[in-house]
Length: 280
Ligand code: URA
Image (tube, rainbow, N blue to C red; front, top):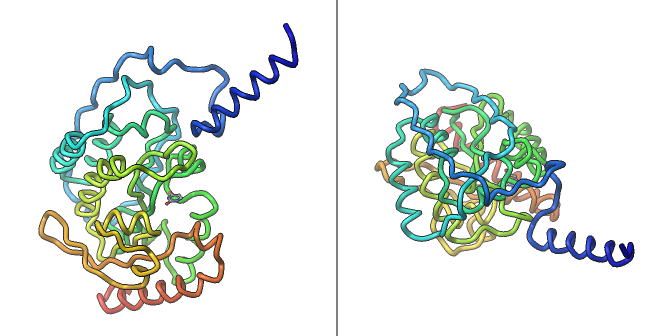
């Protein structure tokens, strides 16, 4: 075999992988996911009582994603399916099981883990970010990479932590390949679950981290530069409303440290709001 040609072939294959968003190896053996049988949908767990006190959630297992069936075609019907499924859930635990069993979002096929949430269910503050990155995908928890570590330090500065007072999720439960921007269809499907997630977690205050999360949750075309730092009220489908604060994404702050001043002002505004609500 001609080594030079083989090497070129390998290089071009690697380039193709990277172009497709495959940017790391996850196992020694290739898995033919198209040859695998379609999984059975997991039944929803029996309805549970709302916990009397905030309960730390267990970290999602960092097990490899199960083998799955054909690529789902994203369509408005999938959004309706997701909405109907989410509406049938009466607790965060039920919703988590429904999201983990859901096969209607194509992102799940390329992700290693479903990244549902971290922190304390029932916390007064719920943070909603954009999408898991490589670290979150590997560990099955949101905001555990460098931007998450910055976010932890920022909240620590106002005396809050994910172990005690924060509940953290993303508008997407699966990592987009190569961290590409999620399509509107992917966002719409996951948003059906996220809106229900907010209803069931019942935060007193919602923080939207970054422009994509803010636009998607608030259903607006306004950019984060205009939205950040301004309190708004998010109306939910169950008739409740939650005070909501869009702010910069920590990844943006890592790229643009000068903007940390505005984020600090947002954190102080959050602290003030929590005091007004009698939470601190
Ligand atoms: N960025 C996000 O928006 N969410 C994460 O979980 C990690 C990085």
